[in-house]
Amino acid sequence: MFPRWPDVIMIARHFSLRCRILLCSIALVLAFLQGCASVYKPQNQAIKAIENNRGYRFSADHAVDHGDHAVFLTFSGGGTRAAALSYGVLQELRDTRIDSRGRRVRLLDEVDLISAVSGGSFTAAYYGLFGDRIFRDYEDVFLRQSIQGTLIRKLFNPLYWWRSLFTAFDRTEMAVEYYDSHIFRGKTFADFPIRQRPYIEINATDLGGGQRFAFTQGNFDLICSNVGPFSVARAVTASSAVPVAFPPVVIQNHAGACDTSKSSRIRNIQAKQQLSGRQSDLSKRVNAYSNRAARPYIHLVDGGIADNLGLRALIDRMDAAGPDLLIQNQGSVPKDVLIIMVNAEVRPERSIELSAGKPSVVDTIDAFSHAQITLYNQETKLLIGEKIRDMESELRQRSQDLKFYLAEVSFGSLEEKSMKSFFNNLPTSLELSGSEVNMLISTGRRLLRRAPEYRAFLDANITRLD
Image (cartoon, rainbow, N blue to C red; front, side, top):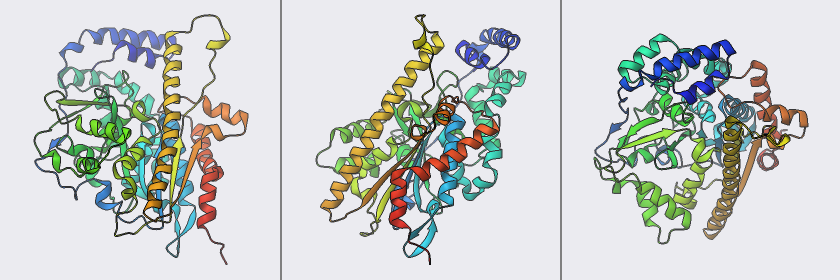
C-alpha cells in the first residue's frame, strides 16, 4: 500500500527538514489514493496429503545422527547489528577446529540447526543457502549495503506508486522483491541443501494468533501447505517486518485440504500421556490453525515480537520431542550439546530520567517496547536453562549422560565501558557504517572466544597437537 503517517514519521527522521516537508507532502497526496489498491494474493500452495519423511523438515535429514557433538545456534533480532554479530560468530566457528569421531573438523561443520529472527534471519538464511560463499560475498551483498536507504528511495519512486495503485504492490512486496533479486537470488526452501548444511529455522510472529510461526514443513503441515516452493526472501521479509513500517506477509490457511492428524508433530504431542503446562500450551498453539473458517489467513510480522532471541524454536522442539531430539538413530547419541545464543540486544542510554518533562511519543514507545523485549528475553533465558536441566535428567533416566553447554554472545559481557556504550547505542536498522560493521564482526568473534561455557566446551573437545 501507500505510505501511512506513522511510516512517514519514522522515515522522515533520517532526512533534513526540507526533505521531511517533501516526504510528508507526498504522503498526504498518496493517502487519498490508498483506497484504490487491491489485496495481494498469498503465495503459499495447498497440499492434499502430509508426507512426514519428505520436505523441509529437521527430522527428515538432520536429527538423525548428530555425530559427537549436537550444536545449535540461535540468532537474535536487531537489524544489521544482529546480522553482523552473527556473521562474526560464523567466522569464528569456521576457524575453530575440534575433535569429532577421531578427526579434527571445523566446529562450523558440526552445527545442526540455526534458529533465527529478524536481522539474524538474513545471515542464517544466506549461510543455509550458499554455505562458505557467505565468507566471500555476504559483506558486499548485505552487511555493507545501505538497505534501509535503498528501500526508502524506492518507496518514493513514482513507479512504486503506480504499481501500488493497480497491483497492491506495497512496502512489504517491495522489500521481498529487493531481497529476492539482490540477496537470495530467487531461492526457495526447496533449494536449502539440508543434507550438507545446518537446518535453518526462520521465525516470524503470527499477528492474529500472537505466537511464533516458523517457516518449516512441519508448521506448514498444520495449514495443509507446502513450504518447498515458498520464497526464502518472503520468509525473511516476514521475519523482519517491523509492524506499521511494513505490512504483514500474508499466507493462506488451507486446513481441511489434507488430514492434519497425520502430522508427526501433532501425533508426537498427542502421544504424551501427561502434558506439562508448556506442552499443553504448545498443543493449543499447534491446533489453533485447524479452524480454517475462523482463521482463513495468517498475517506474519517481525519474529522478534514473539521471541527476539530465536531461542523459543529450540525450546519448543525440546518440549515436543524431549530426549528424542538428540536420540534418533538407533541409539546413536552425541557426547555433548553446545547451544550458542547470539544476542544483539542493546541497552541504549536514555535521557528521559534526566528531566521532569514528559517524554515524547517516540521516546515513550521506544522505552516501553524495549522494556517488554528485555523482560521477555530474560524469561526466555531462564526457560532454556530449565529445559536443559529437564533434558539432562530425562537422559540420565535413559542411562545417557550428556553434557550441555549454553554460551551467550552479547554486549552485556563486554568489560570495556566505552565499547559497551558504543554498541548499546547502535540503532536497530538495516544500515550501518563500514567501521560499525567491522567492529560488530570482530566483536562477535571475540565475545564467542571469551564466553566461559564455549571455552569449557573447547577444553573438553580439543586434544593437544603433537
